[in-house]
Image (cartoon, rainbow, N blue to C red; front, top):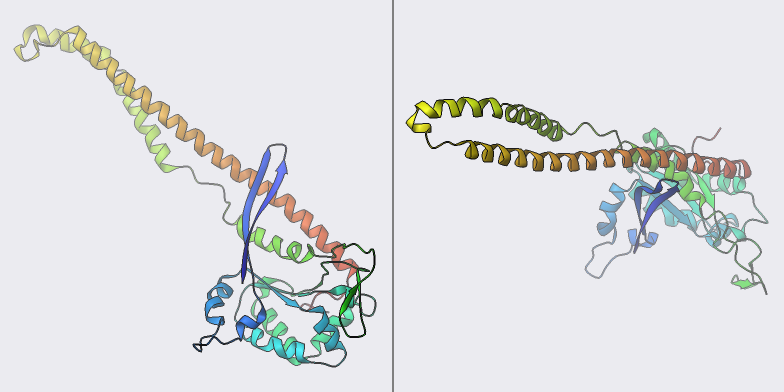
Length: 309
């Protein structure tokens, strides 16, 4: 099992904004069925991850897809335990065919999708998930290749043989993420609502205003106290210097308090501006990925496994 973290960032004239991060966990489907020596299954370890996942990508080995099209149904048979684990998931789910360069010259994506859906277990899973999770959107099938077309050929023994001088040109590897990120953006945007005015800052502002009002009365209070000190033994110790010192001390404390309040207000404004910038960055990213996905769907009709006409 491998866990990777990605931060989604957008560069703009105002800086680099990172609307959110993605945690990507990669593990083989065998972990859902393999048994440890103590009898526990690895599914026990990843069940919580599956339940909390926002998106699930099911990778289909391109070689096994070729075998399936040639009459070997073990590909989907091996997926049945995976379907059982995912049947109650509310996550967005897509299928990804790897090594598409093995199929590109002989099959269209629409043909492959149709053949896969002929298997009742796969079609049943797709229909069930689409029916139970309408908000999750369409389940799609993505053809990808890490080396691209024309890099290698399948030899007589079934092994891949690299073409002399060929260089890798990855094919569609970004499309699965382009399909799911807009859904993640929508979820993240709910967390980026305009922040409500900070009640603590408002209370502190009101308190400062009251204290400033009280300090403004010091000159009047000073005159009254000095006048009474002449006739009152209890106030005889009060002198003009003592009252001025107290007034200056109070003013200095209020100035410190006001300075701290302004610093906190500036921090709050900066956070609000950052949230607005992140939302704008998210908007541009969503538009870019939606265009990328639209181009893919025009080039690969039949990529939707659910919501099919």
